Length: 300
Ligand code: 13P
Ligand code: SF4
Image 1 (cartoon, helix red, strand yellow):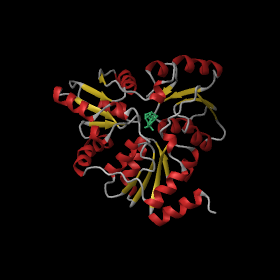
Image 2: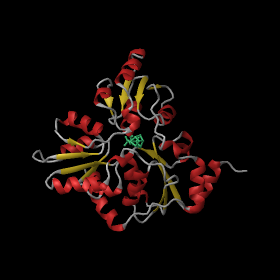
Image 3: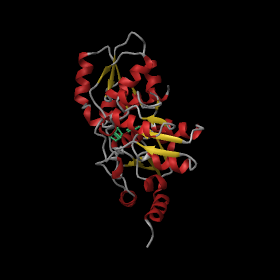
Image 4: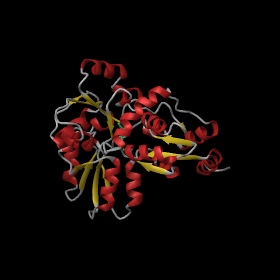
């Protein structure tokens, strides 16, 4: 009987597929992926993959972004119910209504948004480039930042730019309390603390740096420090520990976990490749409209 990993290797060859995975998915899924990265890195990878089949191991908006950037590829999302609750906090009709009422505003959409919302906005951003994107908007423009009020507030503080913030949030990061962050800092006074900018500004205040998942991986790789407190979804610890065996990584308590990212499993990848399921299917005109704001972000 072949292992799930062996089956995946064979099926990948048969289907001529590549597996892209986000830094938060389970360790065994990360280990079978051809590329593991943050939202920005995965968008770039999807755009340049040139593969007939992409199996996307992450949440739905990421698989949709891959399809938008690589429309000629068949993009499979093994578990369609793996969504992002924050993306669902900004319904496209509500964003359209805002646009009607504020025709001169610039709307920035965090990539953690649906394809239908991306199609309505001026430019996208990820947590890795949000600061640059905000700085690129002319000073006289009113900005609506959708849907993450925490990322918006953190970037607003970094840039000094006032923005209107949509009242969305990531349940996994919003749940992190500054008291818990302070407690773990006090217990490890020599550790460097990194948190994700989806955390509230009061948690960011406790940390040394707020970085995207890709930014955190780069930081720990390049740092001379030996001990780090990591304030983001626990899946990232796998790669940090694997890439930096001489360094110690301490998770916040309670451990931040995204239940949707954890839905992706080896079994679901086997099923996905065997049955070519579940294909991301988006309206061509919608994809064309959503591609503009993503491409504008990638050009920055
Ligand atoms: P990154 O872009 O930093 O990988 O974050 C994606 C995400 O969903 C964070 O919750
Ligand atoms: Fe969405 Fe938060 Fe999960 Fe990221 S960690 S996919 S923002 S729910």
